[in-house]
Amino acid sequence: MASPDLPPSGPRSGEALLSARGLRYSHDGSPALLDVSLHVAEGEIVTVTGPRGSGKTTLLHCLSGRLLPTDGEVTFDGLAVHTLPPADRERLRRDRFGWIGPEPTLVPELSVWENAALPLLLAGTGRRTARRAADRWLERLDVADHARDRPAGLLQSQRQRVAVARALVHEPQVLFADEPTAPLHTADRAQVLRTLTTAARSHGITLVLASLDAAVLGLRADGSGPGGTADDEREGAAPGGDAPVSKVAAGDALADRTVTLLDGRVVAPRPATAPSAQDPEACSLSV
Ligand SMILES: Nc1ncnc2c1ncn2[C@@H]1O[C@H](COP(=O)(O)OP(=O)(O)OP(=O)(O)O)[C@@H](O)[C@H]1O
Image (tube, rainbow, N blue to C red; front, side, top):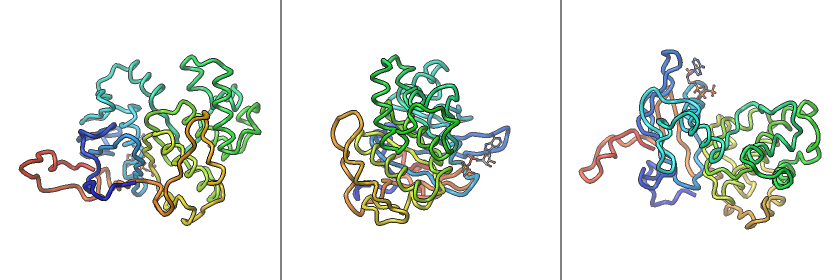
């Protein structure tokens, strides 16, 4: 939850796990990000919203090292992501980040459980252990019955659930989710969003979620928001057999903080404009 004594600009860079400063990015000369700064604390759930074309996807791509910014910097856990050699950046993305896109991109030749277990298998985890972890997430996402099927035999919405399981199976430090509920029906959206945010809370995963979906902003962990389902009850047991999922207190919004982009700039919370004498960084467009 956003602590009331946090400044509206979000955590200061000194406390942040993930930081972007002065990010600019142009697609073939067409500007998509214009001086965006963002600091995300460990375990924080931040929603990035804004109209179509405002730069949400580009921001997540830059933060996760999938794109290198034209200007500015991205740091994660003390690492300058934008200057890492490609192989190191690849390893960082594979081992410590998770990614969910708006379309499920699964490997057609692999079974559903192998797809879900892929991050563990690539990291050298034994097949039996990887299978167990994948099965637990597939169950939680209501697709365990398809564990042995090929992705082609599933509905698009089921494939997206498998993609969500794959993003969570290695319990990444940061999970980037770009419109993760786009292929889902309204009722499914609520469950998948809740599974994502509950998993993030229980496993201390930092979540950066880009969404046009008003439900992300309006849903309540007690199910009182739009499209709430009874699936909360099933989320008590955490995959991995570790600490039970701690539910967010009733009435709390699922995201800690929302950052709004418009035309490649942060427009809310309003960026600080006046630097203070003690705080020279406060003059940057920082949220
Ligand atoms: N591959 C690309 N080539 C050229 N321009 C692009 C490309 N990807 C994005 N853009 C442009 O960059 C700007 C930001 O796009 P981006 O996809 O980051 O925004 P978005 O907020 O995620 O939009 P949406 O909600 O539609 O996904 C838009 O003007 C878009 O047209």
